[in-house]
Image (cartoon, rainbow, N blue to C red; front, top):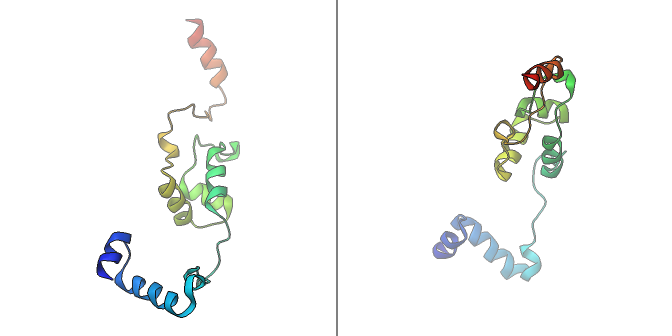
Length: 115
């Protein structure tokens, strides 16, 4: 059981629990059992999809933070942070265009381009 636990990167008690379930119920005993605690209210796909959309203008920011997105989605900021970490999302390091919050941006761009 120790070798199996090491190979699967799980604890020894987990391997023992799986083995006992298999002995008692066969392959059917290896299916996930219902988890304790409150069920998820939002899944990672929804968090990632929301992250890819620009923040609303009323927030006056160029990209999402975990706290802002969490407040927008009605979940905890740790939930957003876990999803971002799991999928390697870093909105503050995007190498693509960032949305400006400057209302005079167009005029400034015209001035610079006109030089």
